[in-house]
Length: 266
Length: 265
Ligand SMILES: Nc1ncnc2c1ncn2[C@@H]1O[C@H](COP(=O)(O)OP(=O)(O)O)[C@@H](O)[C@H]1O
Ligand SMILES: [Mg+2]
Image: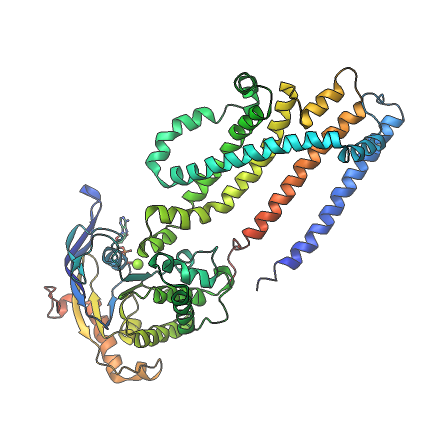
């Protein structure tokens, strides 16, 4: 019964990947020609072959890897804190309507503040280093995880909760053993959304704050003083690839642990 | 064991008030299978939920093992009609059955024994590692029954548990209820709107009227203990009893019981 679904999915994925790769190749060739033919000057759009070579060089450059490590550290710690705060908060506020309504005014005020607008404030309070990045990441990541958890908890089948009640589980027991697992897939989607936002925010903060290390700082260092455009492109490409990789890994994890969330067989 | 006296319940207040249960009195004795039969919307679920301590009725006395029911009592389990909602989709069959036992502080050996014994009783050995979405409706309801059995309740409440499975599966599950009742010497309160089912399963049938609902009568079912889907249902006594229940539901007033006085033990 369970094996049935995988076959058509596999068949669908391969052409999609192939088509994607073709698209990328066409774009690269186009960019390369535009640059080589001098339609756009090389110092603005360097030949893609060079950019790709620089990208390959960057991935093994210890100095750059140190920057990547710095970005990922702030990203991971910030995201981790956001999960630890947003999931329990979402669970409780999602379960108790009164608590949610009481908190909604604060939530509705804070949510629309773009985290990038908070960068100057964060620099003032936390300086230019990792703490500042973490604080911004926490703030930015909190919302998607929080709201998805709230929606997930609201979606819990009332019969499931009632079943747990007949087995005399306490309120906390129901929260932990019924509502949390029920809301987990939606909360995880929130985490994935936040992971992407968090990466953007970390790198933006590094760029704006002129942090000592990080992908953003690297790009800033290279680009200042008429720097090497190709390397700037390469750094940007690595940032993009990192975002893709993170998303890919998170999707794979979700598929694996939420395999039970298949729609009506039987 | 379970005593319900002059239970009434009104949903809402003022103009929107709806008298769902007017006057319900009956009792369930240890080892009995009592079925409650009544038309859809007559308040059967409401009645079960008050007995399970999931909600407080607006009036009447409910006791279980001599104690007033104010919240879910110890020693009670419930099987819901909606097995899809009642099973935990992220847990395997085995983990679903294990779910209510965590709290009880049993030894690992006891736990394992209870889980496997219950799964054997409902015929689900070999399905321990499946997830609910991989099972048919009838099998899902078996898991829910196994989970209730593993909990070893003193009374098992079942709310139209087989209303959403096909006819063949339904007969199998009815026989399953009779077999586990015998095996574990269980006390069961079985709610249904199906007259045949109520008579086939029960030692006693509590017949409910249309709303505002009262107990029309309580009928003893003197059929043999070894019931069979074909033979029992051909038995003239079965046919007489199901006819009587049907008449009572339809024309409660034509019978001599207008004042709902049931056999309170
Ligand atoms: N939470 C509720 N609020 C208001 N009315 C309800 C509620 N639950 C049930 N009712 C009404 O009470 C009556 C009995 O419902 P129910 O106990 O579900 O009947 P049954 O299980 O016999 O079909 C119905 O008319 C139903 O609409
Ligand atoms: Mg009902």
